[in-house]
Image (tube, rainbow, N blue to C red; front, side, top):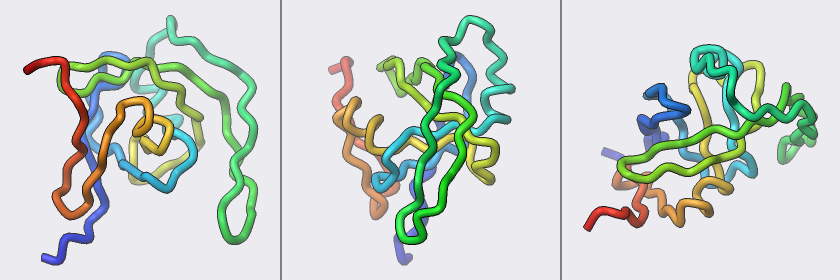
Length: 123
């Protein structure tokens, strides 16, 4: 108590398991740390060199992105190809799953319950 911790989950990205993935319903993009991308180490990933910069809310400062990349995200029994914008440093997180992923998964995050709910293919 109180339940105001960040919502951090463990998830599989391109076959590798990462335990510091932030769920952020206020983020307009899915973000991946450059270090995380190097740890995945898969030459077959679809990399798009062009990545338009993000701008922070409030100050409007420019956040440079290195590239965009499509990665398969596995949660429980679902696999979805998801586009990530790669950043130099997301410390202390491996990745941030934002509104695009939440919408794609039809997921509902709950900070109070410390979980993400989504429809599973298992019954």
